[in-house]
Amino acid sequence: MDRIGTLFGFLGAPLAWATHLAVCYLLVALGCTTGWSGSRPALVIATILFAVVAALAGLTGWRGRQRDATGIHEFLGLGGAALAGLFTVAIVFAGLSPLLLPLCEFRTG
Image 1 (cartoon, helix red, strand yellow):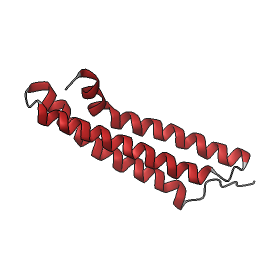
Image 2 (cartoon, helix red, strand yellow; image 1 turned 135 degrees about the horizontal axis):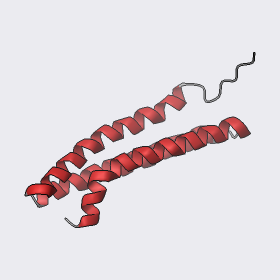
Image 3 (tube, one colour; image 1 turned 30 degrees about the vertical axis):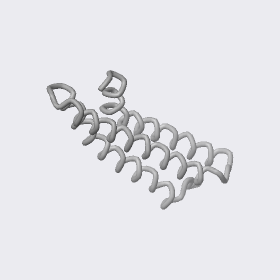
């Protein structure tokens, strides 16, 4: 497997999770400050998009492990596949919380 595929297989899912977290914070802040009603659908779309990216990273890592089962490629492929499973679940759980809880709760004095 080439270097880019190896890096994507190992680091793609954690980077997708971190980007998803930042995008969700941005969308919730945008929805709360401006009253934009499209923030919930945008959160759903972002969650699906980043979960697919994380799952594809895991698949890339797994396939790289199967193609070259020697040394570092096997470790990075298997590690990337395991990380992708963990971070895909984390992305889905983080995407569910804004759907089940109120986006903005303002408390006064």
